[in-house]
Image (cartoon, rainbow, N blue to C red; front, side):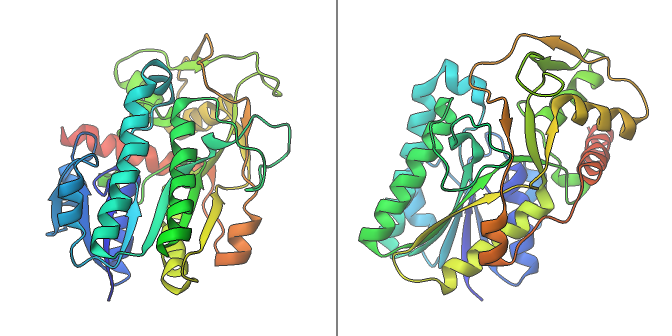
Length: 323
C-alpha cells in the first residue's frame, strides 16, 4: 500500500485523517512540530518525524520514500492573523512553498491540501460554490488562497496532481482522545469558558442574519476525514498536472446562538453566553454547496449538529478527567 506523509498529523484534524488512513491500509508518516499537535493523538504511530514546516531540509528528509502528501500544517487563528499577518504569510504560504520544493526534490507528485471557506468573499447566496468570488476578509484566508494558487501553478508546471479541500467549520471527535483543543474554535472555546466558570462570548449580534449572530456551516470531523481519503483516491487516480478544489461542509447553516442552544441541550444547563463586540475578519454567513464533491467523489456528510456537539463534549470531559 502507498505511503502518505501527513503534515500537521498530530493536530485535531490531522490525527483523524492519519488514523483513517492507517485503518484503510496506508502506511502513514506523521510530520509535526507539536506546537499545537498532541503526542497522545499519535501514540499508535511509530513513524513520526518531528519538524517545522519552515524547515525545508527536514521536509525533504521526511519525504523520502513517500508516495503522496496530505498537507494540514498551518497557523489558523483568524484574529491572530489580523494582528500578526506576517507570521501567517511566512508560515502558511512559506511552509507550502517549502513543502512543494521538498516534494520536487523527492519526485512526490500527489498532494491533498487543507484549505478553508475563509477564502470566499462575503455573499448573500444561500450556499457558496467553488466558482464563487474569493476575497478573503482575513490574512489567514488570504494565505490559504495564495497556497491554493501556488499548488495549482506548480501542479501545472511540475506535473503534480492536487486536490484542495475548502473546509467549513469543523466540530466533534471521532474518539475521545482526538478532541479539539483549539483556543480559537467556537465549541472548545465555550467548553473552556464553562470549565473556568466564565460566560462564553458571542462575537457580535448585529449581523444581517435572523438572530444577528454569524451563520456557519458545521461539519463533523469524522465526515471531513472521510473526504480526505476520497480526495487522496482522486489524486492517486487523477490526471497528471490536474488540480481540483472542493467545498467540504454539511450544506446547512447554523447561527452561533443555535450552536450554543445545542451545547446547552447536550450539557443540560445554561451556558450564560454573553455578547461582545464582533471580531475583525468574520463574514456574516458562510454555507457550503457540496454538490461538486458529491458528484465527483461520491462524498456527502452523514452526521448531525447534535452528533458533533455530543461527541465534542464527551471528548472534552474525557480530556479533563485525564489531566
